[in-house]
Length: 219
Image 1: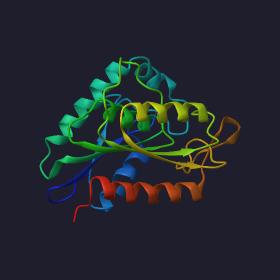
Image 2: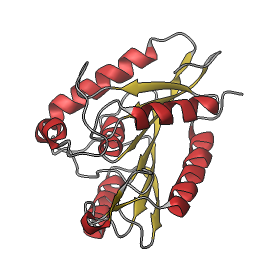
Image 3: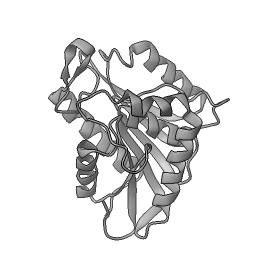
Image 4: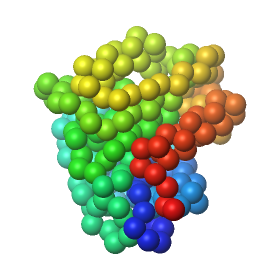
């Protein structure tokens, strides 16, 4: 999804289902704000899952080989940087769930031009690729505190990781909110997965404000 002029860019990272409807909808939502939006594909052409199903068969190979995942993400960043009309020095990585983990991995790797990362109920597990170098990008974590998939101890651990890496980071934690709280079809509370309209609204507003402060607007 493009925008006219030399504008900041959102590097949109998909969830565990791949480049499906929710990612496309998010791309149009960011584009409507005036950002150039580039959707990265960590899986590959034609590899798509079910937005309402179990996509472990697609995600797990990436989780088990974070070096390969990082290579693919950085290749996507470099591709986005070559597009006309994109300000390659004002980019932000954004993603939900698995996409949130990808957004963090992009700034963990020090990708050129990426000034910020935003995660919505993101995976937070470090890649385990050796000592983490300093993180210069700013980071915003938007998290449901009752998320059993990414429990509080994991959140505390990533906060320490980011602190140790010298990152300028902040977190908005929403009480009594579960995983996938921005996904309207999420309705499996027995598994800790549930849409929360109020939290989703607050998280979107926080993300918009953060992006304006870190990479600016098209105007």
